[in-house]
Length: 112
Image (tube, rainbow, N blue to C red; front, side, top):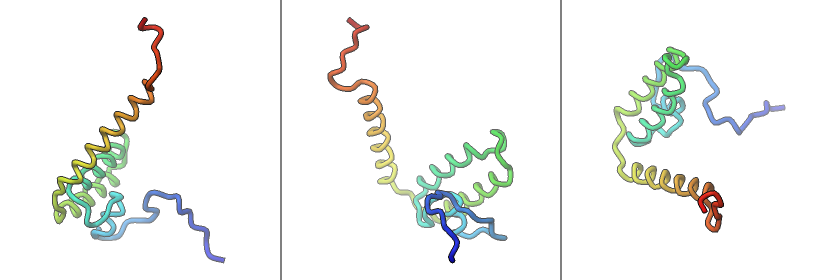
């Protein structure tokens, strides 16, 4: 009987290679090998924020995250459209939160 695979895992569940290649770097950062510079830096910032040694993270993992960023970023291109889409997404999220906090038709009795 084949082993059960948990398809709900979001992160790479394996060890590190002796020398890092683009495939492993993309697995570490959680993006494609062909990701744009902005996406690589976004993923890098999110991961290093959690795994930085000054915040209680592992120096080894922080080094691997830095190596992954350097490998992918060196051959990546900038994509202004990706930046615009991230900005639009943030605006939609802010609008959605505002609507949840103050739904239309809700009357605030304390203001009267």
